[in-house]
Length: 384
Ligand SMILES: Cc1ncc(COP(=O)(O)O)c(C=O)c1O
Image (cartoon, rainbow, N blue to C red; front, side):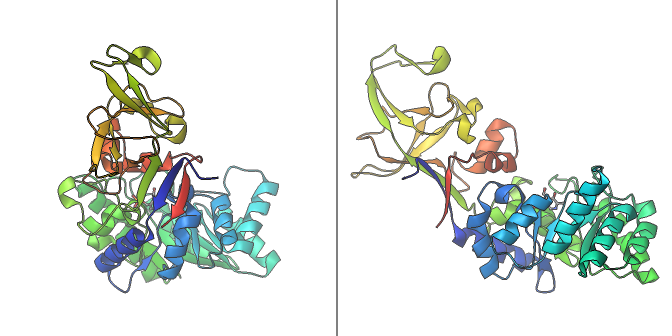
């Protein structure tokens, strides 16, 4: 079946973005791109081959299910699981999850010696090492050990049989803000902890802090490894003047007009009759809607790009009327010769386009992450 809507994932853009990140961090720093939530909505299966080919050292996921998916997709390198997977479940389930993690060699994030104890016991039962990562809360307030307790707990974890501390890390709450004072304070707290652990001789393989924004704006935070997500996909969520010139959106969502109809003046378009034609109009139908993550709040307030055909140029046409679950209507009246089947770009990979991910996020008062993550399963992802 030919898909109605396709998300083209441009592997050349991902390669370029990884190159941009590597240029910022230098050769001694490992990459751990975030590929959680189906690679931020772009499709894990589509993105992964580029990461394998480029020698990316490890990747980050949100939970054990995503970690196991990566193994099924043929990712053999280290995996960091960034959210807790062992806490708050019963003993049987903790034992099972710990064994799954050790068997698949997924480094799970622990926040207590008890959780690490589950992994240590699983490691001994399975005669395999249990790689773990320890999260420290230096100011995000979401998860992790508080800095005051961290040194003691990390030393306890290091002493557990079978446990290898792959990393100790923290996450920045506001590296996207113009003022980096809080981010710098978090980094200082983390570096003080690193110093204490190093002085005590606690064996920790890597210390890491930096998300995308810190890769580009906080070089002191690069340390041993960086964890960029958004920038690897080519988007930016920081001050516009800091947008790196060498990252490029990797996704273009494309489709074709499924209907082109002439309506008389004074005719309503869509649910709620929010658009009434002022003149005889040519209304086109695009087979995407809020059921695919094309948000209803864009009704009467977005453009879709009509791609060139039959000598007609590339034009932006306005979305008119309410976006419904599966369909969006556009006004083609001024577009020239337009026919059913003509190609359209719903989300453009040009970062200056009015229908790029960042522009849509601004319009919706949200972040680029939400735009890409919400693209639904009916949209077929293809690597190009
Ligand atoms: C712990 C952690 N590190 C790194 C990232 C990647 O962040 P970004 O996409 O802003 O680069 C995330 C994403 O949410 C995260 O939760």
